[in-house]
Image (cartoon, rainbow, N blue to C red; front, top):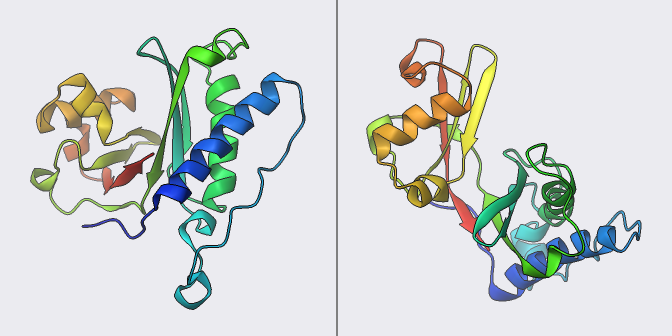
Length: 192
């Protein structure tokens, strides 16, 4: 398993600017419904759509003083990446139900990180999961949970704990990832 896309420094910078502009324009009360169009990548026409225009999922994570301040994303891409990052940045800042909307006072001290997700695929063997490399998603009994690849590293979890915490996040009993009918997916992500 390897990422099916790449982002060069200019593309990463562009996505960071898009996320910041999405939040800053909302804080300033400007109703900007779209980010500026990304520059065309060299050779994109011959190789197909460039990464910024590919339908990829993304999560935008905001932290304040090292603590989570908002995190919203989409696992499956249904729109060009640059539009997805724009929407997820606004959602992380103003729509995460765990937090009040971000304020102008908080914004200068807020750090943002963008995780661009590759396609989800069924995990063929839970023993092959590498903590820090693989993000996970679990679907079972009408419930679902997802973790970005960096979460178990930040929490100090091993593989077994990672899987059990995924069950808990989905609101399922421990060990549900093993149950007949449970669907365990994995993916990789690039963090900008």
